[in-house]
Length: 78
Image (tube, rainbow, N blue to C red; front, top):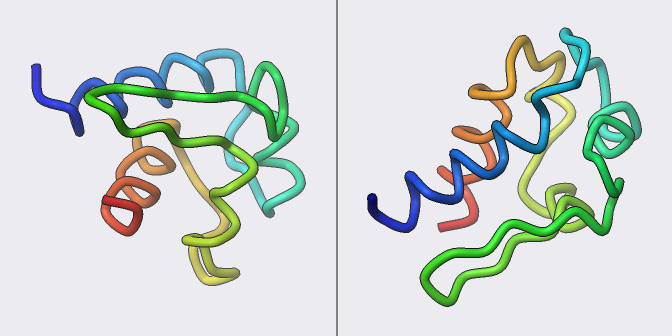
């Protein structure tokens, strides 16, 4: 599994208990198990949920699935 796939797996897993759609950044952070401190790491790359705001825009919301969240974050962060 490559780094991007591993990070996607971790993000999707972290959001497994989330209720979708997610309407905004605060709701997204609340959906992560440790909130802004939720961390995913692979291949020397570390992503914190709290840093997602740096790559997400208001137009990204609402998110309909954990896969959509992961793909959006990873497409901009990597």
